[in-house]
Image (tube, rainbow, N blue to C red; front, side, top):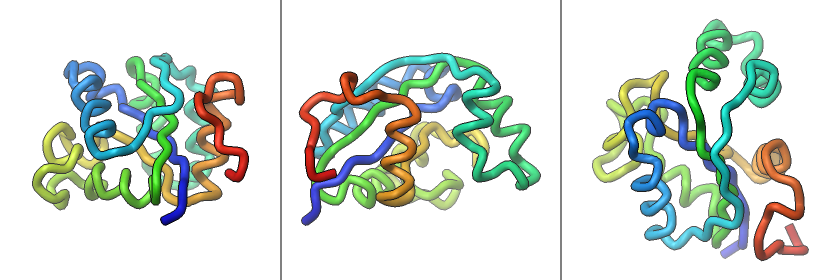
Length: 145
């Protein structure tokens, strides 16, 4: 197994519902280690930059508006095959399609307000973690990553 890092965002809908701590507890219970954590309020510019990959998509404006509608909890996670493991824990993007016991099945409202974000690959993970955390904010740095 490969030691990896991935980014997690508990989105505004889940923070507003008061389930951020439950989601973080599930992450830890899954064996993933939280190595950086903070609650922030994204500015429109920060959300636009983070989701720039979706700029040409029809939902981009709504996504930026949603992600700036309230605070989010961002964390960097570490563990063996962390990216795939966290994506499995999150569940399908559309909570209606998510497996029972996944974060999205239990905490998401709909496909737009789907409670959490996770990196989709190793390259994306590095970029996304660096977007929110500098090196001094990450505990137990892995030199090989």
